[in-house]
Length: 366
Image (cartoon, rainbow, N blue to C red; front, side, top):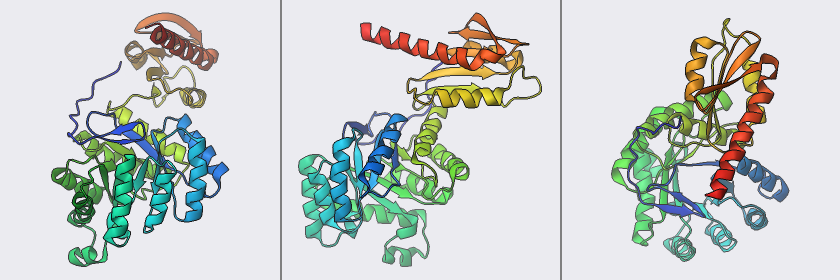
């Protein structure tokens, strides 16, 4: 049951962050940012590995000092994921991380001092094929732009972004992606829409400082959903005051809901009502916990009764419709078994893992 998305994506130039293509016809990538102290190499590496395990395409690491740049070198040597260094103001840090194998820079060229310093960074980035993200944030607009507009407006954010772009244009550097983030959904959405009409660079979407796990997820889903539905956005980051692993999970869930990207188990579950023949909520929580490591796309439907259960089960790769004491198991649309309600989680997990092993074997033979 893998639906085609009705979304027609806006045509953008393509850049590469390490092995990950962004823009053009590349899948929308999902990224997060470490929140460990970068100088604590072991903690940062451990967190990046946890992000890799849930499918992160790209991880950003803040590199605020030369000490952090030294640590970055050690981190880079220990992980596979493409890494972007987050740098503000000091061009020497940018030169250092580029020498040490960074895959992308988040640096605003207008904020690193003289044109000579910017030219040094840009020339090294060009030599090494390292893209630059211009990241505009409603909370830190340049003073003259703030004064001109009085408050952050979509036009103010876009003017700031285009000012940085023009510096890179003058240096004939076009390996660029852009973000115009704000914590207000309307402001961010309007700014991205306006920007998408002005440039063909790939766009990095995010609602900044969105909030805690629940409120930040809702805000991000609405803001990014409005943009993605219109085909705007090439890579996304969900900003949550939560474990960065949750940012990746929410990012994939947003893309999955719009049929833009399939990764991991798509669990279709009823909210549970008095018709349920087994405890749906406990079952779903147990399944989610057990299936966290699976990145293979698969639709699994678990419905507590037969009213909607059979219809949903027939549409899914693997489906279960609740019944009295025993529930009906469907595989690729056909009823294959009845399962004791106490055994549902074990049987489903076994079925799902067997199906993945079969798919992998078939790919291997092909």
